[in-house]
Length: 330
Image (cartoon, rainbow, N blue to C red):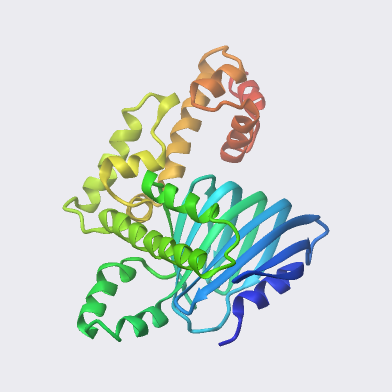
């Protein structure tokens, strides 16, 4: 099988390959295609034909474009952010979707051959990437399990996730502990370490699937009920403490993807944009009808940093808050 992963990192980074125990370690000397300096390392463990594990840690600003391999491999990917933040977008030729991974976020994806290009951008980023090869897993399961049982398992677990969509999910204490154990397991230099590592990876896979089944299950709420409940939560909360999307998901026992898709289809905008509009419209009222400072207004609508508020306001209204105030108070 073509080593797609190695070809990708070789196109992205200047690397030095160091064989280490049962895995490979790549020292990142710099990145290609940009003047931005980048250092770091990447450890890769292909301990089974069913999956591989990657530890990535970078120092500096990473900015990369990579094409989606044309391989027909069906891959189920779990990404856990240990530190930093990574913004990436996927392009299927029709639409560009942007995603943000922050510290302690878990992203889940079923690879889609429709995606043509990925853009990656981040600073001082550290993560664990787990990739499961579904065909190989299916083939190995068939040695001991009936085909019908395997198909039912795939329908209830893997196929619940649409291809090409990244599901951002909250982390539980159990998953966090397992990932921490994998992260600190140390150099895999003997069979005992290998067996310990392998069992942890499979455990993470099954625990994540079980957790997500709860959020991806069919709901009795209609589309309009979901939209109205999201609006009620947002509109009935104090402006400075509107719940985060993750908290709204927990309140409704729905995944981030479900809420975003249903809300956007109904309202024409996503839940984040709906919340942002509410905050910006309220800040316009404060700028027009009060003499509160920009700092006071930014704090009142939930921004800790007035600079971030000013940038958000300018993006929404086309002018900075100070200029908007001068215009409306003439």
